[in-house]
Image (cartoon, rainbow, N blue to C red):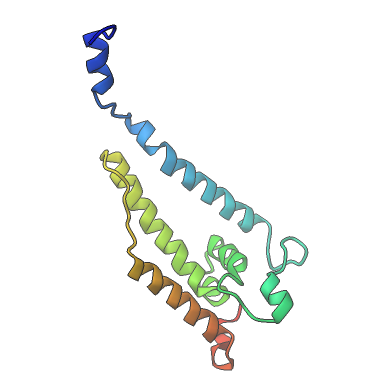
Length: 149
């Protein structure tokens, strides 16, 4: 090996293990962003007109998309009114809880120095999509009036 120092070559090949703080930087930053978003929605009431835009699908068609009522749901969730949060957007509440579980798994794996691989197979993605489609259809039917935001 011409021109390469043996010590520098072996040092370059050695894996670098980030510190605990380095491994937790991204999950903690993501949590900070989510907490900031929830704090904003908790402070600026979406039930008062003029603060947030109206859902374009609802404005054009009068149909509720899977996200309709999500801001009102987050506002109620922040204020501890979990029944109102479920009433405004049940899928949103499930997503908040799923985020909490996924984030916790991510932090535990990062703290242990393991990769944060949470793999969702195609059948899982299709299942989530199908559930959201059913949720959307049912909330727009007369029988699904209890799912209206």
